[in-house]
Image 1 (tube, rainbow, N blue to C red):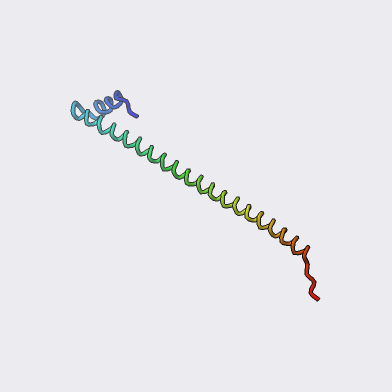
Image 2: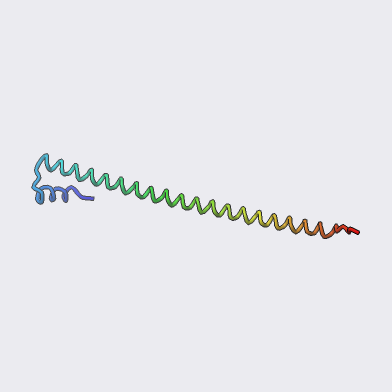
Length: 94
């Protein structure tokens, strides 16, 4: 960010501005700096939103994975129980 002194030196000494030209120069520079800061804030916000999206997607993927594991364990347990029941009640066909 440019200071008033720096802008005055640039405007007067390098560009030869005086009075209204110098004020307009200050105004334009300050507006440009303001726009740059706003653009930077928007860029950072977009990055944060993207990061949040990635984190939420990873979290959702982890939830789905855990749910699938829990279902697999339940199914495995049910299969073992069913197998035990079937082996204990074998029917002879003669």
